[in-house]
Image 1 (tube, rainbow, N blue to C red):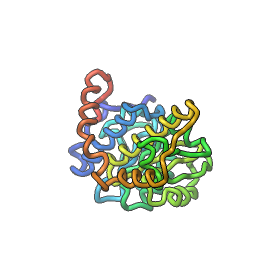
Image 2 (cartoon, helix red, strand yellow; image 1 turned 45 degrees about the vertical axis):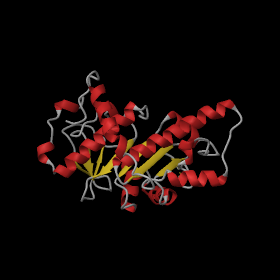
Image 3 (cartoon, helix red, strand yellow; image 1 turned 30 degrees about the horizontal axis):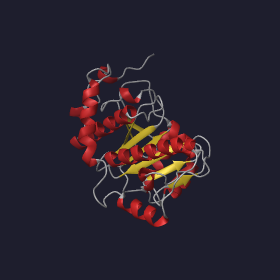
Image 4 (cartoon, rainbow, N blue to C red; image 1 turned 180 degrees about the vertical axis):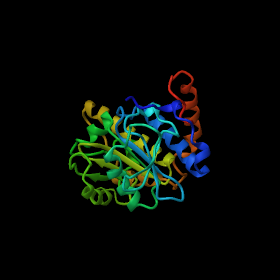
Length: 263
């Protein structure tokens, strides 16, 4: 039986708190933005967001494209991956989603959102022994602020949780070797901004390495630049551009043929 999706599910706005509905809107928009900027992997990967004032998380149904996801279509789970609510559908959730994300949400009270991707550039850099190099201003943001997690196979083993958390540490970004990228943040807007920058840095590195000789600034310049680009040093990340990004989604919605994210 083909599961229903999108506008075939009546909006649940009047069935949840205002805080949960706003969280659903923000997370659905983030899924659409990841798709819009070419960081999706068909129906795979995950973005999670904690519902304010609770230990419950929102996550995508395992079977929808990111461009199909709406506020109502998001499943509500606990940090152990138990589904507390989902639309009337055969779709469930991907186990890897809560193995990886649940571990970080449990360990980091400062984290509200977690994004994990399998992009071409992200996987390429994750497969390089050198990791992310400080070649561009964008990549310099991550100097001293980027964790690395060794590949242990598909993330289905609960025992891997503690190692993911340890390798992430206090950072908001993690390269999962031979796998992909992960970012987190105090808001979904911040987590998206960090992922966008990390992905851009990976794309630039892959392009630069084709050209041959690489140029890296001095240690002092790298450390100073990294400090200036940390969230909160000059401004919180993700806030300034968020409404512009929502306008981008609204404009693209007119010709998309998919249900709007806000239903």
